[in-house]
Image (tube, rainbow, N blue to C red):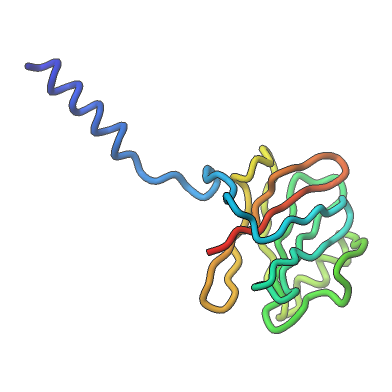
Length: 141
């Protein structure tokens, strides 16, 4: 009887683990948009619901990227371009910009940032990374 109780408790512990954190979720099945952004530059994540207001900045030589949202409008005048770390630091003080850092370690879709557009929440996840830049996908609500 004791073995059966222990086995049942062990099974309950395995089945009732807390839900994994965002960092352990798989990438979405049907991405809304993909974007490849080179190191030392920024680029738009061109999903229709984002209305051109969600970008990714990839600092040169860093394992951290930034998901950049325009709060009141587009945070950048162009859809992509080079951007130095010092220029980005100055931009972050702008009230129109919400920047979320994402540390890139695995680049398997489990690392990313949540983006809120109107009432919906989306995810911008890193699905590829290398010395030349990153690839991200936007996942729907």
